[in-house]
Length: 157
Image (tube, rainbow, N blue to C red):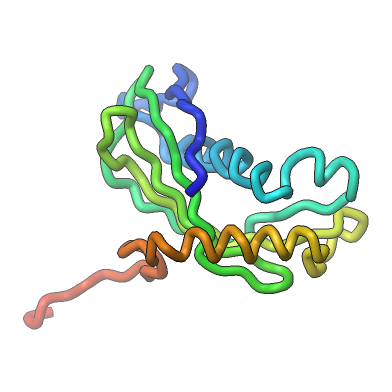
């Protein structure tokens, strides 16, 4: 599983409630995702040299526990699924003390930047995805993955 470098909650990210604003959880997930994408071969150099990249199509974030100024976190990245044009991955954001602060499940599209348009992964990247997916399948599917947003009602309504 990919594990990000340690990241720190920055001053400008704190909202009027005194904790990390919800938008910046996505910044942390995005930075960690960039680290994983480099490991798969989909990083900045890939975009620069091949004019191919990925765009996020859908994100589902679950906020578990607040973060505050100066908190230090790491994120994991698990590739759950892929096809010839898409990737579905799951990330966990943890405080360096070990407790879970948030999760993110994402669907991203492989993009030809000249369009931009969705295109298949090149064979070398597809092979990387297949290898990573097989390795990470050993971790199983996280219990929060694939959950829909819903309001659960009791029998009385």
